[in-house]
Length: 415
Image (cartoon, rainbow, N blue to C red; front, top):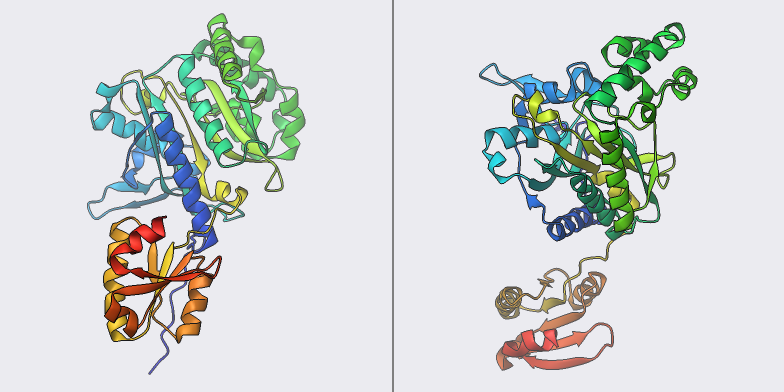
């Protein structure tokens, strides 16, 4: 018989077990706890969306849309896409699911997203994100709220000392228009010295040149006009309200005047929480105000702000969480003891006690496995124990062993 070839995982996809899975789960559990503290409602979204949702929201010419999205035609001939991020899907649901009636709406979610890019440390083709958004709130306090949420999440993950918030303003539409014109004039004067990608961006969106990764562009970027020279009084007041709110809340931040978002629907606040704990400085959480996105999807003007964070990257940075161990492991010897053990195991679990049962090997091996699981107690069952209706309960920390009636096991273990 020919040997069957085992299918291998798709590049950029991963499976998790043990400590890696525990780290991942700890990040998600912490996020869920903090979002409840802040009153963000949990929402669920489809993994598949019409391609137009992302093409319109991310910009037709961005690398994500043109090179990285998993897009294909379904059997009806419709173009659909595995979500590369959450915000666009939330905006679509806001318009199509009747969520507008709940504004201002604070929502949070997490789950997988997909981008076809080169896998690297902490980055995969199927990756997972945390996401928090406030829709229908144009006040600076909404910006403070999402930033405080992000800051507290990172603090509760133990990352408060290793991560710093980089903050900038993108101004209002009048500010951005004047600044964009100034940037175009500056970069056009240096067109011949720009990288090919930046020359392509010059007429489409000169703001994106500020985020260029090409070293030859950096001296030109460093001498580019800064947005502060073009801020309207309204935009300046908005940013001042955000920064004073962060100061009042005790959120540590640093001004990053070159921090930008390329798409025109971004307004006012832009931010990134960055760290050098993974080697080169990297972003672990990023977001901003996107007051024009809902309009780009065909809806009414709706101010909004939000952020996203990569679960994998956060998982790599946190301390390993405590190992989840059963409170007790039942070690039965013999058929009758196994039957009694099944009944006791079910009763303990129904009463809220984490318990397991060892079934393989001799008594010595079963006891050793129980100890290695991290259990606090072993419940030993044999023929004598079944006949008397009592179990031998051993405290693995002290070595103390005592007889406990079956119907008193819950009380004995809970004491």
